[in-house]
Length: 288
Image (cartoon, rainbow, N blue to C red; front, side, top):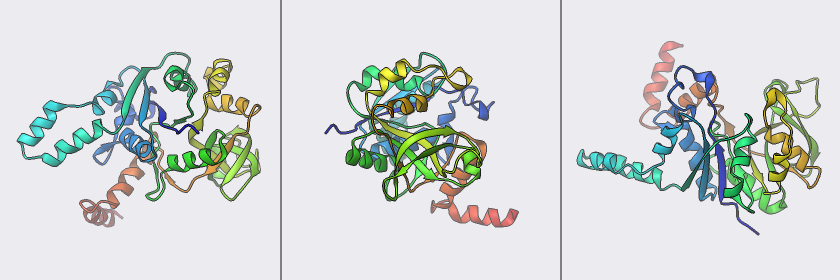
């Protein structure tokens, strides 16, 4: 059985919800405290066993490449200034994984960056993770849960989570058959149907384990909503040829692509840090 060692992270989007901050800075580089969002995503992948990170980029994304590159000048300056811990951290970031960069080409849509990475993936199963959605579980990273499920079932795996009525307006909804307490055999995915449009309350979230037979399907998938190439359309077509499953993950999701999600992430992460939590709690009490 081939191990999953490659992960595609699409980071070519404009990040318009954070303009003007993202006019010159990638949204994936927005910090949660003192670490950019994209680093949390990469660290989750590495903690799950991924060795090759494929970042599909676009214009104005050079800062992401620089962040994961070696910067000997900065390391030397930190050491000379007595900041040895910072120097070690800068080098650790560059050595997290083997980083591969591809410039996105093709129509808009989240299927395009996956298709762009076809030649790098080859004939291996692989992961796809969005670059602005940290999932937190200190005991079992979200991606590790998906990989373990793939190794058990040997089929493509989607990320799923239980949602309420309001969630049916925010997420795609998975309809299918429960095969165990946390695994669903996927029949179809309905995009934001609302509570009246489905009886299912299983939301489809970001992150997938896919197999290379998705590529010829993506190449022949017609553009969908908003004239974009949608990955989930190709996955549903693949489901006509082989089983697709979804894993109900036990995690906390932060949608840092939204302003409120980014703010919540900063507050929650700060409250977990010994150097910040007491002063932050004091401030929160003051402004209540």
